[in-house]
Image (cartoon, rainbow, N blue to C red; front, side):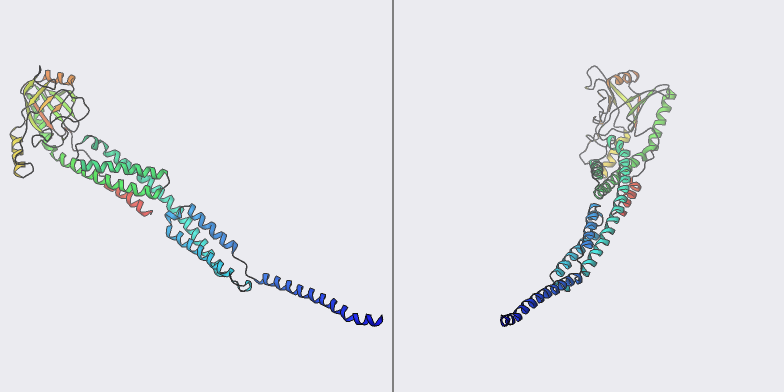
Length: 396
């Protein structure tokens, strides 16, 4: 039995040593794995998340609108950081190095944060400038509204004025949506239209008022005649759309009137719907069915000055060779329509026409002028709109 025990002793020792060796190898493996984990580079989770949040914040603050290039650069850096991270993940743990991924993420964070801050500053600046610009251009549009409502300006000018109104409305709508870039673009377009329309309208009126000295002379001569003859005389003010009746040189009545659609300037030819300007006299009074306009007083247009002007314009080629000078210009009733609708005549309401008709006779002077007042002081929209457009450009 002792011999048998002696034979089994080496076997027991081997089994015992084998178990110890196995435990030793397992312990060494665990220690090695732990060392690999400890010695491996830490992934750039925190840096990458910070970069993503910075890009998201930049977009929230509309950097894609106001700092688009810088935001694109930041997003590119974020993508490159992600790719660098993925490349390192394909390496053996102990060989991984996330320095590049972390550096790109940090650069992304810096650029995105700068884009967000600059976007906020540019947006706020553009909002203020656009708000002021809209207010300024609306004031210009309103300042010229009476001209475009009452003056017979050509359709080209009216179209520019309407376009200025439409663009400023679009600008206001974009401003309410906080789309300040579009709001600025639309108000600058409105500024351009009102500048051109306003300047041309101002030029038209200024040129028209160049006749003011002549008008003043005609009115003075008419009032002098009324005073010297102690008689009535009529003065028609086309700009104010008023008909004044004087007696003994003093104004005793005034009536609202309507004219031809093209009343600015002098009548040149038949069918131009313009009301003539000059010194005339009543040559015929019409009542009792003699006129379709209730009551009428025909004046002696054309006079010698009108004919001279007509033939000179024809010689210069300003009117057609077969044009005629026209006639049958009256002061008549059926007015009060609220628009300039006559073929060149002066229209009063029937009640006013009755009063005027009773006080006038054949031979009564009728002087028609552009204005009985001085030349108006007008403000060109150019300086205001140009300054506003310049301010908007500076914020882009």
